[in-house]
Length: 163
Image 1: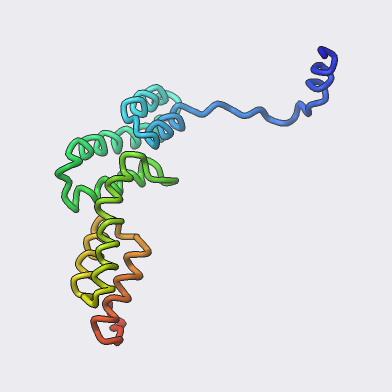
Image 2 (image 1 turned 135 degrees about the horizontal axis):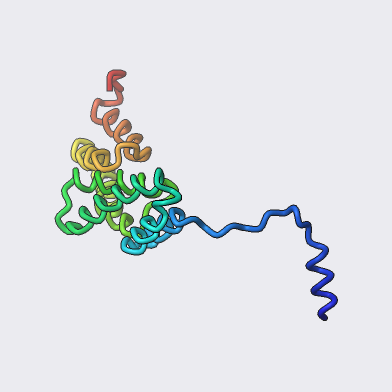
């Protein structure tokens, strides 16, 4: 048994690099995604010596994010837009765990209501919901497309090239 393990170990290519552990900054981002802002801050502070360029802006954005999340129940559209923008700064790969309810409340919910209004023939009312979504998430492709469709419907099928 021991000789089989030794043979296997010696047969491995020594030129294949071993996987490296994540850096303090990468660990901070993982904690952010998991919703643990305190641990995220701690890990980023640990990485300040080696990864200052990445950690300083991350810590600043994290502090702003944490402040806004403290007002979760009373967030305005502008504050929700700030939360979404900060989330994209903190992790461009996926929204953080704490941002998902904000997206549900200010993006997905209003989009569903806009579709409901549109299906009932009230394009003007639907556009208001879509406009609120675009205030929070200006690059939301689904909202941009729905807004174009609603405006075309409201104009009687005539699309104004200036819009």
